[in-house]
Amino acid sequence: MITYISNSLEDTKDFAKVLSKKIKKGDTILFFADMGAGKTTLTKSLLKELGVQSNVTSPTFTIVNEYVAGNTKINHFDFYRIEDESEAEEIGLREMIEDKNSVNIIEWPQNISSILPRNYIKITIKKGEGNKREFLVEGLND
Image 1 (cartoon, rainbow, N blue to C red):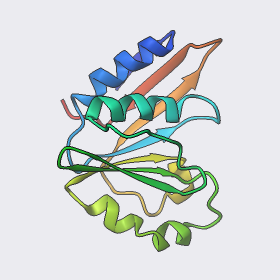
Image 2: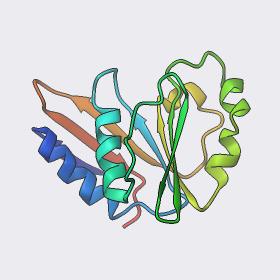
Image 3: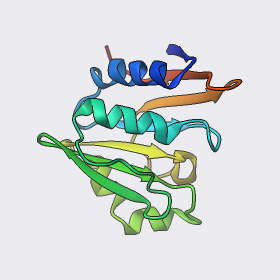
């Protein structure tokens, strides 16, 4: 497990830069955190570091936003609002996470636990006082 402490938005951007160098096609990244802990903020920085040029927004209401970085497709999911896992099935989640040419970032993965792949990178974000965040990373192959 890797632990990274961020005391500012700049620190979080630095963490995203380090993380981006370890992400590869076929990876699924799960974000576990409370509301407002910084899942989307980290995702925005991470996607910028991966080469996404377009504006990154939260998929809270659309469930998934798709981006392209070079020849890599990046799917950013937010399952906070789903009421049943079948909603994730209906948008083609299984096919998307099985695509070895894409990277998948999933917020609120606990809401679709039976659909998740066996191998994933788990990032737990713990919010501290002010801008302080603790990022706990598991499953990252060095």
